[in-house]
Image (tube, helix red, strand yellow):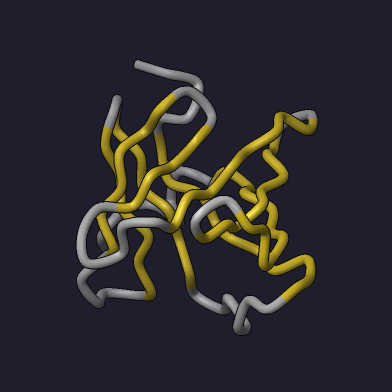
Length: 98
């Protein structure tokens, strides 16, 4: 289990990101996905504090910095930042199905 394991709510802080209502990241070990509600998620690989998206989203990387009990993130594409967000761990009842 890594420090990022679990389900995280994503909150937009600025930049060119769309509204992130209902967006969550679920991380287990070296893999995860970003999803909206029950729609299929965009898969990524965990590389330290970087989330590297797989095809067809290759080139997108989320860079994370610890900030207390949450993480501050920078959304990048091919090394260029285009948005900022926060990851806040869900409460156990929020991250379960029913």
